[in-house]
Image (tube, rainbow, N blue to C red; front, side, top):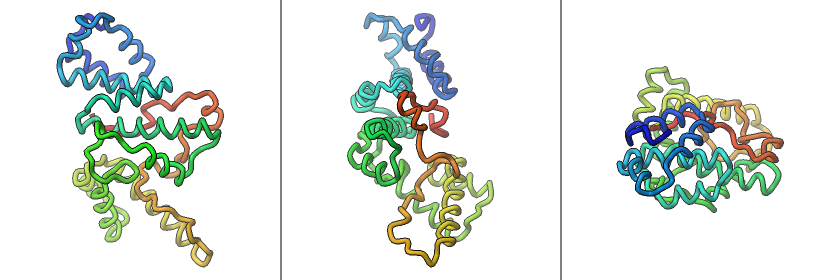
Length: 236
């Protein structure tokens, strides 16, 4: 099937299927590539097409729990910054899942921190700037400074903050919701011994009240990762 597409069309199909979370269709599309190297080079000759195909292959590898293949793709190929957010999540979540499957239980905040220290992001999907929970330290500083002045930013202010930090408006909104929830929880616990009770996790960008783990115990045992659309907004 892929033989009928130009390199630009291949890139477009990969991006569309990836964004829609259609992993089975994306997997089938990738399998339709010609097997001989001379024909395959048609689809990998342009940088944009090559990156889109490599990114799609990484996503499919994650979807099918082929973690060794995923790590190899991410470590051996250099990706442009626009692909970093998604690929960083694939890298971290794959390592989280491997650790959870080995231990037979979900990872907590400390466990995830240790995994990130043990398996740092490869420079092929990271610009080298200090990160915390997958977004830049300078972005976190901007959000914290704004929160001290105004914990409830308006929709327009959220868009402005997103532009200033390189995050999406949804990520900014989730950060403020999570931070307000933690502050309310901290206030309600005043008077109790709380040494070590709260970890510095205001970098978490997942929606508030969402499960802290990626999948249930039954899903862990079956080794099926969540659909990629659950990874949240990604930059393409």
